[in-house]
Image 1 (tube, rainbow, N blue to C red):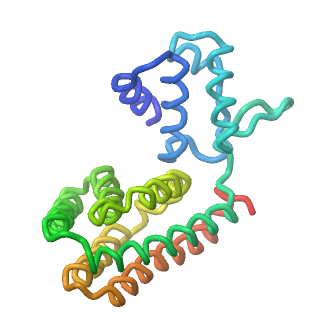
Image 2 (cartoon, rainbow, N blue to C red):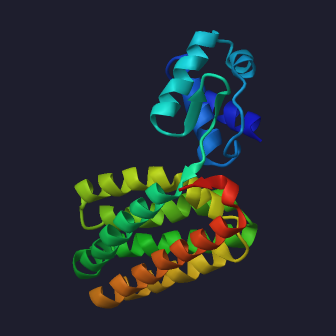
Length: 231
């Protein structure tokens, strides 16, 4: 699977071969194609990108700085486990910010921006019908981003984008869980209805319910797959 990702990233990426290797490795990790504790074979990646071992080491060190890779002298390099305590804090920050953003949207978001949210929901429904998991994930991310863009909350949107990047591995890990897409879509619809009806308190509550369910699913997943995480 990660070889397909490598090809897609390399085809669309600009910059040096080191940058391409870094982006491909990062994409493979955050999408789950490379699971936690998977060894990273430097020779394999050197061959795939036709670069030196030093170049791959540079890419791996960048990922180690981002806590996506662990480098140990006797063990080599491998994909890091997801730090559960970090995830909990990022989710708490996201919840606090998105609840306030949706309340602002319900008060001040322009009608055309609300209509664009409704169009996004229609595309989400189509993605579920066609079984397009990747398409739904992208629309899900876009749905939440649109709520910061609509009332021009650019600085808050930047913070939320950073938080989503940290949560990307968790979000992609949970997305294939049975009923996850349908449940997420129903919650998005509830958020949209309250926002479109200009009901800020109810919109805030709908967003809280949505993000609380994600937190609950995370705890259930951790119980079933403890090897993915570290405290």
